[in-house]
Image 1 (spheres, rainbow, N blue to C red):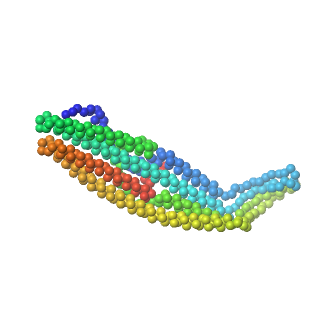
Image 2: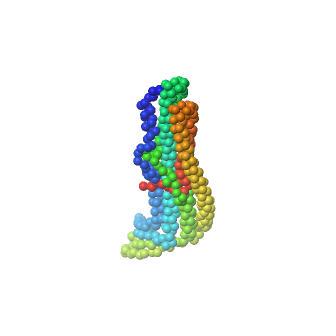
Image 3: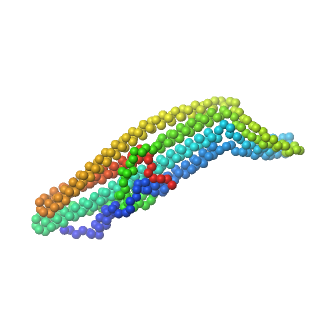
Length: 399
């Protein structure tokens, strides 16, 4: 039997078994970690804070003003010598402006949720890719062990002159090929892990990834989608702008505390109630009101369309998830049968009952079935991610 570079082989096999070590971490914890590190989420969070301050500013009462001054000549001074102006919002114009600002906050919050869901999608898809790479690497390690065992059995039979030397050459080639496949799978795992770290902006323990349970996160609970939240906020904004348009034709009220002019020898103080009523705005208020009502109708139609489209997406993802589950269950049984076949052929080959070709055919069948199972598992995990996205469900929590 050919001598292997035991050091290199040991390292590769150790990499293949990394997924069996480490403490488990659930998907929600991983997503939460990613949300706390990604700058896109931080940017959206700051946008929410900014929108809240803008809403406060938009809904603030008009400022209380103090006007004071004097002229070089008492008879031509103009303006107010000393007056305090305090507006009173009798008709809720500030409240209407605040509602417009609140709609802006909801738009920003929808943007924050959208950024978070995008990060979650990146993390879950990267996790699925890493898990697929780890599974493929472990499968390659299993197939390498089979190749090594076949080579050892072949050498024993060649030494006993029960087989020609050419059979040992073939066994050595199969072992070399299996070694290279395992090395390639280790490189794939490294590349997938780098993508995951980029998605999370944080380090990740490979030992915990393999133990993740994707299917536990798939539920029938439905949350408002970010598109719906955005349209609802825009509808609220349009409704508030319509109310603002109605209030444009109502008067502004102000309390004024006045002092007699500086030129007067006596000091006299009085309060004046000021009412300013717009008489004619050339159709501005009506045009704004009509425009706002049309926007509300447009957003209502958009919401209805989104509701139907999102329901269809949920049906599609549910069907994909069900099909992927059935595929995984089926291939698990097939893989188990293939493993049993390999064991039986190994025993038969060692006893001289079957040929080397038979055992390699059984091994290749196992390889194909292991690959199919790994793909089916990846398909299931991607279906779970798609289902969460279709339901607007965020696993992680924002800090």
